Amino acid sequence: MNKELLQKIFSIPASSGDEGKMREFIKNYLDNFSIPYKEDGIGNIYQIDIPNKPLLNAHMDTVQDEVDERL
Figure: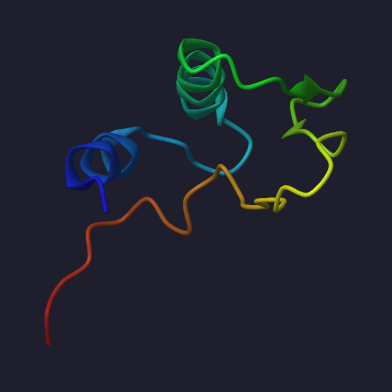
């Protein structure tokens, strides 16, 4: 697991309806590795045209804006 990449992803603010920074991060990451993708009119990023490769599907927005507190 790439912990640095995971930390970068978790540090990007992406509240529901405001996923622009996350979208740009993902597109730049895919471009850097020459991974082809498509983007639809509402900003979904996907690629389903690569035979014999798994499809990764995930939300780009975060669940909440508040900081979690340990009980």
